[in-house]
Length: 154
Image 1: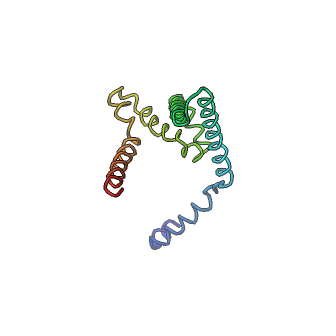
Image 2 (image 1 turned 90 degrees about the horizontal axis):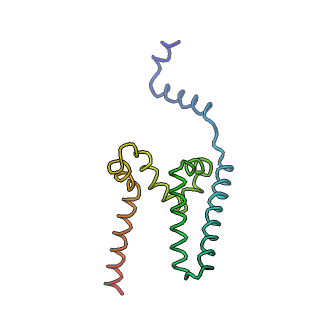
Image 3 (image 1 turned 60 degrees about the horizontal axis):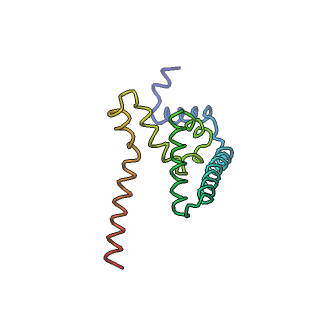
């Protein structure tokens, strides 16, 4: 039987292999994934709104309350990532935990935690901005370009 398979053209072998893979591959549960992403993402946003209301209730203006809310959400996400809890939430919630600002905090802390065994400087320090570095550079360059365009075309 092995001789027959070896004598078949490579394209036929690839098609047969793909057919076998499709038969045993589990079907994605798109509806369930979308539901839990919506629920968890919504709960993160509800927490953000509660924090915003709390800070405004303490007398902060809207812009400062928004900054405080973002800071607390980033801190909580970083803390939960460090404790290994956020990754479990992300496995369950998918994009619902990645899209809000908490996902950005997770993407900064996760590489640092992965390489912490290499030390504070070469491990944590060097890896902390693996994902955030390009985002920050792009944001700063874009801000400069928009400012220049605004300056010359206002």
